[in-house]
Length: 148
Image 1 (cartoon, rainbow, N blue to C red):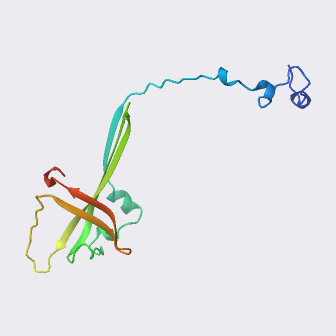
Image 2 (image 1 turned 60 degrees about the vertical axis):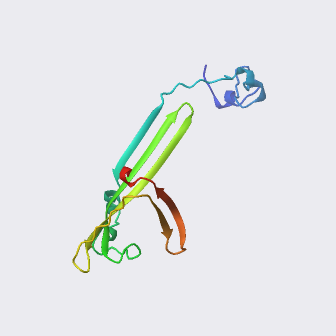
Image 3 (image 1 turned 90 degrees about the horizontal axis):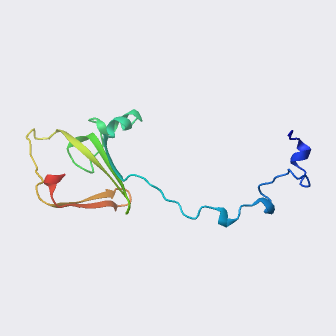
């Protein structure tokens, strides 16, 4: 059978077919009513250092001695590492995901030349605050610092 423009557009032809016409629509009873999906449950976790990709994007100063982190400390500090962890778990009950990022800061030198060690070995809370608007953007509680 040769299809021509005329034949394709002629509704009176017995071979004419238009999927969008009322006569050719599939009735609801013709559809599959139930679908069973079989998929394995899984849990994935990733850990990676975000400092290198950020440096490749041009973020350099915060990783150097010229970092402006005076709101965190009066001492000369910079970011040494940014660790990011994410997790996704899919089970028959549902899906759960979480992500966390930790920034490691290094101290270059103290003004007195003496070292002062501060060990946080008991529960504490922390607040990450937007400097400009003076509002907390992240508040957390660490109940056991030995498990961090």
